Structure formats: C-alpha cells, structure tokens
Image 1 (cartoon, chains in turn brown, orange):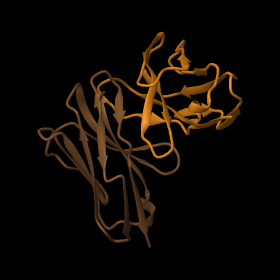
Image 2: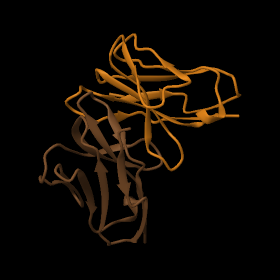
Image 3: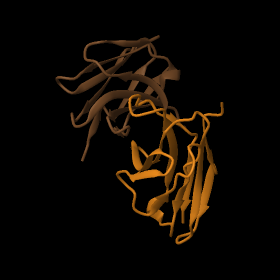
Length: 110
Length: 113
C-alpha cells in the first residue's frame, strides 16, 4: 500500500509562533509532493513541489522537498488564528492520482 | 467559472437505500476523482477517471460505482447503503497527469442510519 505519513498529528501553538509540519512518502511512481489546507470544508491547494532543495514560498508559508530522504516540510512563520486548519500532504503520481496523508491539525491560540 | 460543483450538500439514507452523488466541473479537466473523508482522517480515493468513458478503481471502491459519459460530469453511485459509508465525499478534478494539483468541490456529507 502506498503510504504518506504526516507528523505531528496535531499541534497547538500561540499566535506568533513558528511551526514545522512534516510529511514522508514512498518513492513508487513519485511525480510531485503537494500541500493543501483544509478549514472545515474542501481542501485548497498551497504548494506543489517537484524538485529537491528548491523552496516554494507564499507569504508566511514555505515548503521544501528532499527527494533523497523522501520527505517534505511545511513551515508557517508568525502564525495567526486564521492559520488554524488541517494541513494535508499528498504524493502525486505519474498516473495522475494522489495519495493523501491523514493530515496535521494545527490550532493557533490568540 | 463555477469550478467543481457537487450535489446534494447533505443527505441521510436508510440502510439498503441507493443514491447518486452528482459532480460537475466546468474547467475542461480530463482527470476527475471521488474521495471519502472519515473523521480525523485524510482522503481515500474511491474511483477516478482520466477522460470520458474511462474509469478505474482507487483504494476503497467496494460499494460504489461511477460513470463518465462526458468530460464535465462524474457521478458516484452508492448501491445498498451501509453505515460504513457514512462519510464526507469530495469530488475533485485536475487538468492532466503532469499537473497533480487538484481542485475540489464543496463536499457532500452523507449519513447512513
């Protein structure tokens, strides 16, 4: 079975903290690593990573991929209460499918 | 563009009933997917389609069927509903197999009693 493993499962921080979310995957049929944010509704796309070592950034969020060690991290700096959500990691394959991890639930307290 | 739309938003079924969850996208995407999401879990792929007339099973296809007669529509059929099918169902689409980004519909919350 193709596995994507996220850690931690949940995280509680205070506004202003920096968080790092982890995602490891299996190499079979790998094409890309994707991050989504889910706030009690449908997931919304954050990043797609295909190359090792190249950081993708959007505001306070950034992500990087290590294809040798088969993992990715998502960093959020200066967290805000609006960052509270489930963050999903997915492995995209060359057959067009994606395998999702179980997500990390982030709670940001004021 | 409306993106990916799903109907209904909510549904309660009795054990043994059947229903069809509708999904439509207006982005001319070739790839479409059906997922279920149980509480506290990620998305599990039920079925997917790489184009009109072509469908294939995902991780958890038992108890479901799909069809893809047009590029736009990808309905999911539940036959003989069971309590284990209580879940939130998401439909998604993506342009092709080079770009794995998926666009999701708002979801259907299904309860089987």
